Length: 372
Image: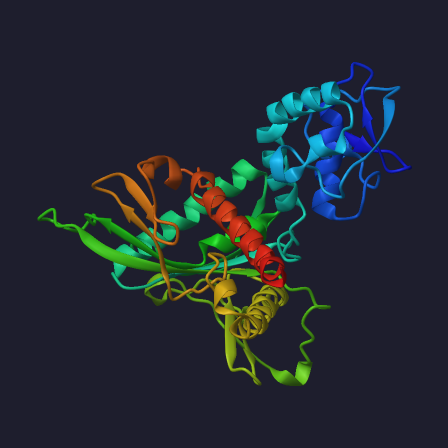
């Protein structure tokens, strides 16, 4: 069913309301731009039947919005009783598909976060729990490595601070690839682990915590850092136990004077490479500060979304004795601990992405409802 240029209802040559016409009106209704503007075949998944040529036009007007039964009033728009019966029968058949496609279209038309396609800068820091927290920080880094590999993304270590037992006090790395920040941003927050540490002789379960911070990588055009705003110190790198890593002053500490932010990098033997990596992290942190200031001005409803990046919030618990992972933001529990630590993180992230999409839909629908 569709309106032609003259505003008439068109039916196919079998005197039924064809499914492709319903697809066209769904798009027109969602976009509120009138019929004939969007290519229905390109915009929607196949499955409701091909477009039928040579439609038989009937000189019957149709209300501006598609109707199905009763209050939608399609049958009142048809003067022929037989055609009205056929239309009601076929429209009732396509009603479930209509509603589903309308929702899918609204989701696709939601404004996209411009940062989603940027590379992600990820910082993992050991929190409470001593060596066990450092070991779990290493476990999370391995998890994200496997996750990135499964997505075809590239990981580059920017700064590492290892512990003597094989963990990390802190590790900073970038994740580059299609929609990498759009996925990784849901990992910001406190990750709690419950397990028996390797050093525990009595089998007691300990609880440790690791903080993950995720920022979109900021380009030089995004953040203008003036040289006179930076204090750059160089020193010799050192590893666990204070042993010398190299004998040249290649490690770099960059301090942003206006904000007091400090970034260090000592992974490379080249002082220039360490400085470049440190500035990359500094730009990402400065951009994150700007975003947090903007979020502080937003409504409480917007801040309730799960991707706000609040790093002080406990977002997830990894319980080893029970083999479960619980995401506290949406009360999701999965008994797939081994698979998740092996990099299968999508079962956690995709429900969070869907939750955000639904919140966005509700937020957009609210002003329209209030306006009525």
